[in-house]
Image 1 (cartoon, rainbow, N blue to C red):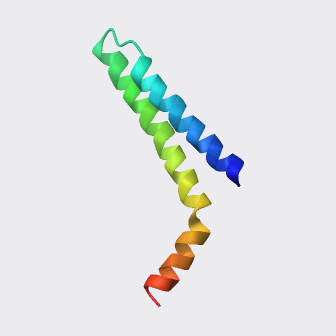
Image 2: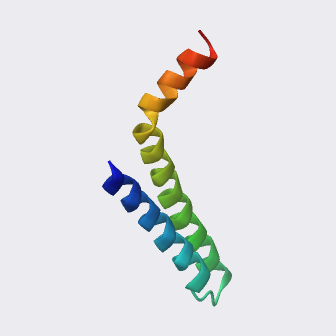
Length: 65
């Protein structure tokens, strides 16, 4: 379980570094980088939602009995 979270954290860190360090020479480079980053971020968020789904279900039950 911890390994999964560490993996997701590492992917986010890699994405952040990519966004910071990628050289953009033309506007198309920026749009391609943004599109790729969006896809990766969406994938990470979807995996986080699946990972935390059991907790979310329990909280939903507690908050809305």
